[in-house]
Length: 56
Image (cartoon, rainbow, N blue to C red):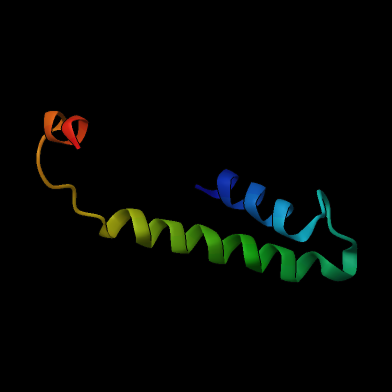
C-alpha cells in the first residue's frame, strides 16, 4: 500500500524526490494516502461469488 501511495503522491506533486524543504509534507501525504487506502480496503465488503461478479 505504501508503494502505491508513494507513486500517487509523486504523480500528483510532480516530484520524484522532493526538495529538503518539502520532504516533511511529502512524507505526511504518503502516510495519509497509505492510511486512507488501508481504511478503504479494510472497510470493503464483497457480496456474492466470483461467478456473480463475472455476470455483471
